[in-house]
Image (cartoon, rainbow, N blue to C red; front, side):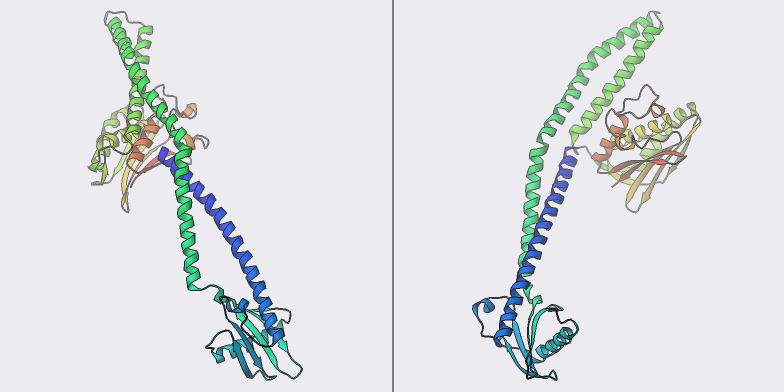
Length: 394
């Protein structure tokens, strides 16, 4: 539970910080791009006004190249200037012609594709095109540097989230541990006086002092004894924290064994009992805890199947996973109760919990067992057909 809480905290913190990081980084990139574009336009304008490139510091220090091409009135190249030493004249001529075509269509523009340009047409028919390829802003070295910075930033965000999760969840961990310790201690302390009450009630009943008060004392003592055992079992499972002994078990045999023991119980309650269990499905698990899980699900299904009712236990293999399903007819679980059905001491509406022996612990124990096996448990209402509990063994 605590680990899931920490994982959720880290996930939420990471998402928030990454969102902030992306927003700030995007703003920086847009802001930098805007001023790079503005600065570049100023440079090409100055060069166009001067009519030549004299490699001033503000140009030579840039990460991109500037080109100046002069063409005659028939778009034939006259000469080229550039901040680069080796220039591909044909490529520059081709780009200059395309810029001139674009400029005639959109005379107020200063961008063509990835180029920022200025066109100057003189009275003697010479056309001067000064342009910069902004694609050169992004160089491999700079791209790798940005990627490294992003990775380092995300790593730092994760480290911060991890340590924050320890700090934030520490009070909750301490409170949860105190609660577990209290439940465990209280349950152990209650066992002795409860045992004494049961023994005295049985002794009085053996002396032919049979009356409804003694019977009620014995019944409630048995009920309290079940509650204490369930509390102790739940406390035991939570303290194990994934340390239960696992081995390869035949899940088909375990399911069949538990199902057979409940056929008579179902018959007495007028519940039809069906099994759809595939043979030889194996998984790595603790057999005792898996039996307890199946017992809880079948017992819960029979209690709420109705009279008459139906319960279906199925076990199948889907891809690499074993799927255990327990379906029962009867009333559906309300939408308000569904998110809380696996919480400790949570009891849904009276229509599903008329049984006096229901403490709201069975499904909490079932979920704890599934969690210890790294599986998944879910519940689903089947419209007009009842409820299905489904366990996925990973």
